[in-house]
Image 1 (cartoon, rainbow, N blue to C red):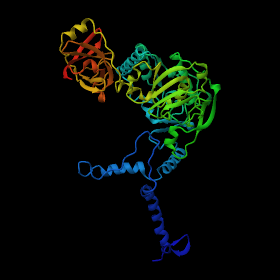
Image 2 (cartoon, rainbow, N blue to C red):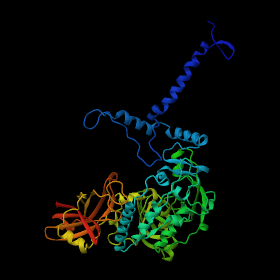
Image 3 (spheres, one colour):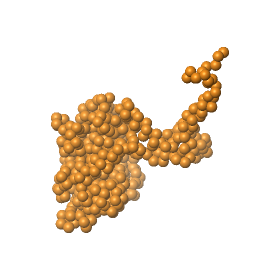
Image 4 (cartoon, rainbow, N blue to C red):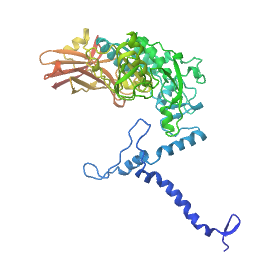
Length: 527
């Protein structure tokens, strides 16, 4: 049989046998580089807000073989393979340029260079709206915190930082159709109903339905294009609204006092393009957030300095104003401020740090309101991102719950040790946490008006009646919490351990209002 020839040149293919072997060797070697490259260049960091997988162990602590070793090894390789950032970046550039889609799980690639955080899609498409009961519970919990702060002599303000696509939906991909979400309107109604000093940032940014503002108009855009947060110019707008609600003094900065620099690299841009992320414009004020602080870091300022922490991303940051601050010279600065916050407050921090003699920014959860004991803070702000607002009903704030007076028919039922209401069941656990006792549990068996599963009616409160063998009695208002897997209505209340130490306690769980309560649980504890 005649030998085949290549490219019409009278030379047998067999003579290229070396090339035939070399090509697959090169391909296989390239594929193995990410694996064996872990010996000298492993990936040990990520721009994602998570911990990387740890190296798996073949033998578990009990001495047996780890049956999940292969699965864990796969996760470890996925997180740590060599040159991951370069490969991820090249892949992202290819897919965004050719197909117009994101390769990063947490990033939505929008039109005109806009990037959105995928964690906000649930709100954007109204996949898990607030139930009426949840909105009531969140407002109730914030109102309890506000009452506590005001009792300690602190003014109080609460705000929700809007999701980026809630304000600027025009550049969202068409594959994610927007569904009208009434959750924030429902929550606002409940906050106002319960008297919470709520600063509505949706109104502040003036981008509600019917607004003529467009993402094409750069002069009106207050969020970053390639970051999930508001820009420092948007942060100034939010700061002014919060300061006004607290009757606080400000430096009176306006857009005219800000100057732009193309030096900000957004969090979403880094997630998608870890090597080739492009800086975008941010706005700075002299001495406030222009990098002139002693730390020299971005957003530092010569008008203030760190007393605790060294970066706005730290869990707890304490700042104080400096002698160069105009407020120091004119003696018009505000006093001491506490802000319970999340990542949106990174932009707020320099403004408030420049205007308060001392400011504490705490992003640890649950909020530890015991910080206010002693009246050390003149003002308290709670800032929460829209995508995390439901978390305000996940955990009780750490503070003594208020004593309440149960009167009229409810009081008689409780004093007479009425049996629990038919069909309702409650649990109650007791834990000692420092100077506090935590009473927490769940209530099941009642289907409310807006419920799927077992829920109380939308505006039922939960109270804890505590009695000791000496006849001392107190009724406490509890925090209202999300039940596990929507199967119950949870609650928790902190009470002072000194008042009830070393005593046998009878505990009743009540639902309703102070004017009319029902017993849903009766328990006995030896403390």
